[in-house]
Image (cartoon, rainbow, N blue to C red):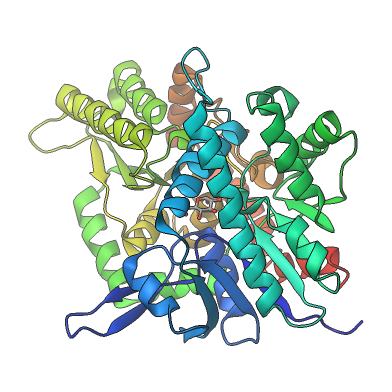
Length: 458
Ligand code: G6P
């Protein structure tokens, strides 16, 4: 079969820009799992990446047309800033993300008022702008790989004008089953699923989200498009390079001396409601209350970084997290021991260093599309870390059998699991770790890209 040209379409792109002191524009690798997984594969190829210009510097860089930077060919779209804010903050992050992750406490929210309808119209316009860019830029016969919940309405407009293209959608989130999707007004639920159904196929990180999508499509449209399942792998070489870099080595040394001979419990997350940070700290507090033998003998390193701070829910959540951490530290700290090491700086080498030194890795999301940290933590571990994992993370389907199960709402149960993880005999740790490492190493980011291209018939 002839290889099709590849076009990737995502809200957050593989490079971001900033204004250097001398006034020139400086390119930097973008953040996020999608870029770290897919970036190395796509860099240096002919593939085009279409993404939103997120900052003023991105916008300036975008003005010059297709950008060639860091090995990528990027078309950064300078969208109307008001439309973009409504589409990204109000629709994508404050509603669609909440719907797919079941985050609404429905006594008060959501409220779909007139402003929401305007925001939805803006979301549609942003999607149309992406569609127009695909129509204009995609080479003849390309496979167009559209990523995530920001871009559910791109396909119908592209399909109408470019029947030569094969459109694939991939969700990096869970997908709302019918009972969660019912929160969306009928009209928008219908438009959303019609948009997704206009793809050749829709992909997900695990079978559960694919089944939930199919059920929702049947409930709303009476039919469902083809689906496929392909969990994103993380790239061992990329991680090894970060760990071995001067910044990675320095971070490892600094952290090792900070922790000393204590056990290290680690989490690495965006400060994000679905990640369940609060219950994680409450469980740690309970662990220290129930098991005095761990006091002064363990440190909880929380490498968590701010996210989506344009949303009041996220700011409030961050404050609550910081309060709970301060409470735990106040309650248990001694002159020589700080129970929680809270690091809200977005420092990837430091996170990798923490993952490499961890004795226990806590991944307890309320609901999570995949969770790459569980894989990254396995790949870089030098201590055969025990994984305490929520079954609500998509990655559970791949590695759940090697992990200790933590029910995300069960704080006391999570404390028990942390105690079991910290106390696990060395041979059991090793067996579980080796089994997980084999699973995580079995697939590469290239396999994921190949799965998307296979779904496109490329
Ligand atoms: C999740 C989403 C991605 C998103 C990332 C970071 O992983 O699936 O699409 O890029 O979060 O969120 P942000 O809003 O900062 O792009």
